[in-house]
Length: 250
Image (cartoon, rainbow, N blue to C red; front, side, top):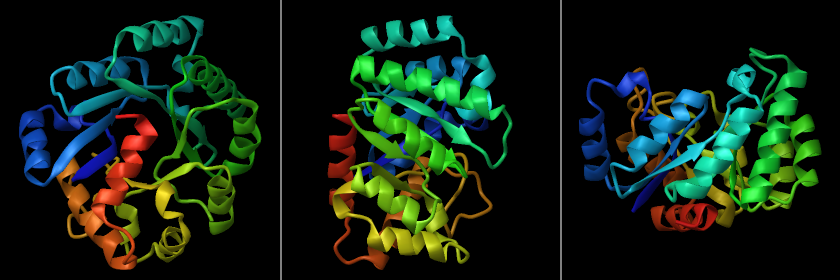
C-alpha cells in the first residue's frame, strides 16, 4: 500500500489525461492520494476532484507565493468549507519561502499566522512549505496548538530536521532523495525517526529517478519509496502508510 501525501493533480498540467493518471496511480499500488490546494481557485478544484474519487482527499491553503490572495473573506471561506467538506483532511500548503521571495516576508508571515490560527480552531493538521526560512517558522509554530505538523518536501539541514523531530513534526520525502546531488537529504532521511517519515510526489514537480525530466505523477511514488527502502532496511511501505494514516486521520 502506498499513500501519496502531497500531489497537485488538479492543476492544468493534468488537464489532458487526469483520469489516466489516476488509473496509473491505482495500478502502481497508490491507494490514497492527498491532493493539496495552494491558492484560492485551486483549493476548490482540489475538493471537487476529491469528491469524485473515494481514495482521493483534499486540503485547503494559501502558499507563500500566493500570499497576496489572502484576506479575511478567504479565511472565513476556508473555515466554512472545512466544516462542511469531510474530504478536507488538512490545511495547507502554507508556509514561508525566503528562497524565491515572490511575496514580501512580512506578508508571508502574516498569512501563515492567520492560517495556523484557523488550523488550531478547526483542529486540523497543517502542511508546511519552508525554504530558507526555518528560523522564523520554528519561532512561530509553538505559539499555536496544532494537531499535527508536516514539513512538506523537506530540504533543510540535519540540524533543522532535528528541531522538527524533537517537536514531533512529520517529515515528507520526495523524488529529490533519488538525485545524485541530494547526499545531505539522504543523511537527513537516515536519521529521521521511523514514526515521523512519509512519502510524497509533489507532482507535477520533482519526478524521481528513473523518471527525472518527465512530468511527475502519483504512480512514480513507487520509485521514491523503493529507493527509500534501499537506504534503510527498517523502512517499508506499510510503515510509511501507517504514518500517513495517523497524520491525516484517514
